[in-house]
Amino acid sequence: MNDPQLLFQPCQLGTLSLPSRIVMAPMTRNFSPNGIPTEQVMEYYRKRAAAGVGLIITEGTTINHCAANGYPQVPRFYGEDALAGWKKVVQAVHNERGKIMPQLWHVGNVRRLGTEPDPSVPGYGPMEQSKEGKKIVHGMTQADIDAVIVAFAQAAQDAQAIGMDGVEIHGAHGYLIDQFFWDGTNQRSDQYGGSMTNRSRFAVEIVQAVRAAVGPNFPIVFRFSQWKQQDYNARLAHTPDELKTFLQPLVNAGVDIFHCSTRRFWEPEFEGSDLNLAGWTKQLTGKPTITVGSVGLDGSEFTSFLAGTKEVAQPSNLEGLLARLATNEFDLVAVGRALLQDPEWCVKVRENRLTELLPFSREALSSLS
Image 1 (tube, rainbow, N blue to C red):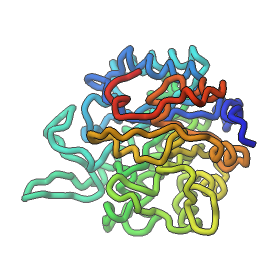
Image 2 (cartoon, rainbow, N blue to C red):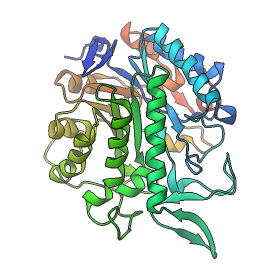
Image 3 (cartoon, rainbow, N blue to C red):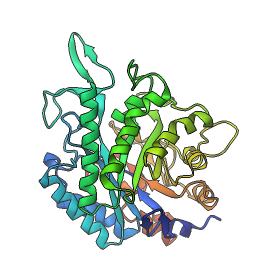
Image 4 (cartoon, helix red, strand yellow):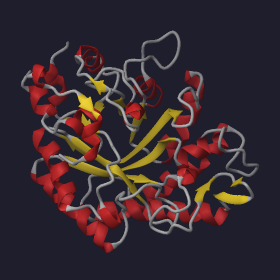
């Protein structure tokens, strides 16, 4: 039951054929000057594919909207120069028999004035926000919503055109799409606010537009989370019934795979069951799911590494993960920090060289290796 080789079985999910069940989780790296992925970025992803990652989901890439970006040197997914850079990444990963898709991203109200590419543009979000009489977040109009939907669809179409194997839509962690989901940041009185169905409408319309742009056979992954950067204890759904109400419209819109973001994969999502968020999502929708959350490491929080710290996340055994995978609780396993620290993580696990696994420390964030 606890054989690590389970992670390295080929996997067919609809039209997506993967050489292993390991996914590289999207992790923002800030190493793309002017939004263009470099040769170094290409090599960073190539090495993970060569070591046995079945599916690489890239760091968040911004769509073509004036307020999509919130951080320096984040790659974009528009413009001939950036797309040419991503095409090289695709070719490098495919040469290693891996699969790759971009995570399409709009940060929403997280953006601050002064951020590239246009420092005069404020954050965009479901509701206007002001501070000391100055507007810091632009409340989105219907025209704004329509423009963002078009930008997501165009990015997906471009991904298909350069040979990507699908797209992931970032609907998690308190960024724009999630800001519409969450009643703490969405108190609109129009068709995009109020009930869970209304708060999900923006995401559903994005998925519908993406599906229309790429056709029926191009995989769409949707990433969502209960927790937010602003509130670890936030919940979109408090019960399985509420979770089904949230997920079913996304299924109907065209989502193929759900990427279920949790802070610790081993924690049960609802009382009375050991199933995690990915397990419940698979059971409720019948769709394949990706689990994620401190895989291969102890439970120390990723966010604690974003500020100055000497904390280290130690490797942990994979027995609990493998037991869940063996029962088909979920289909794929996304690995984040462990893969960021060590490009050879997959090889070491496959060859049972577990004593060689590296702890994760903040220093890993300062370079691409």
